[in-house]
Amino acid sequence: GAVVSQHPSWVICKSGTSVKIECRSLDFQATTMFWYRQFPKQSLMLMATSNEGSKATYEQGVEKDKFLINHASLTLSTLTVTSAHPEDSSFYICSASRGATSETQYFGPGTRLLVL
Amino acid sequence: GQSLEQPSEVTAVEGAIVQINCTYQTSGFYGLSWYQQHDGGAPTFLSYNGLDGLEETGRFSSFLSRSDSYGYLLLQELQMKDSASYFCAVRGFGDSNYQLIWGAGTKLIIKP
Image 1: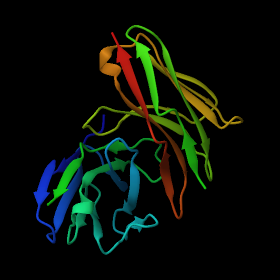
Image 2 (image 1 turned 180 degrees about the vertical axis):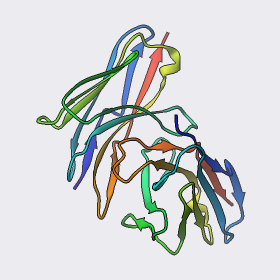
Image 3 (image 1 turned 120 degrees about the horizontal axis):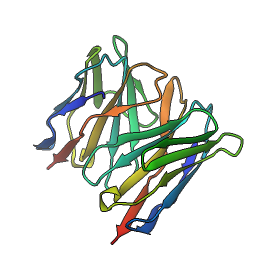
């Protein structure tokens, strides 16, 4: 199987601070990584798609200056929530696929962010 | 717009069979996937249908009819651990790239 890790699993921070979440594919090279957020009892909302070595593609309504994504290598992507506010509190999940057209996405365990 | 429709909740009895339907309307279609998500956890991949027909993986089967824009996930010999949310997702073409378009999820409640 393919393993994707996320760190940290839990974050509690004060309003106005920035939080960085790491997503790593541990045993395969991920050409494409996806970042989702999920509110309780709701579906996954795709925030952005990142391809290694290029700029991320953000979904409509997602502020690229607020949610900074860096896909520096084939095994690591980071999401930085800048100047976090309580409304940014959510479950953030990354997934990785072996290629842009791969039918399977492998999900990380998710990061719960609570902004006070 | 792009959308996937699936029931919000299904209830079944342990040991029984349950079917979760999914209809879709998307820009481009490159396959239908099913994911399972337990409360508090991340989604895990269950199955993929790229062509019409039935795919079987143990107690779980998934079916696709592209002409009807319809698929379903069939769970047999239900166990309590199958209580979870099940999402159908279509691999389609978004604004600028391939992406999974997600249904809202079906919460499966299993009673003893």
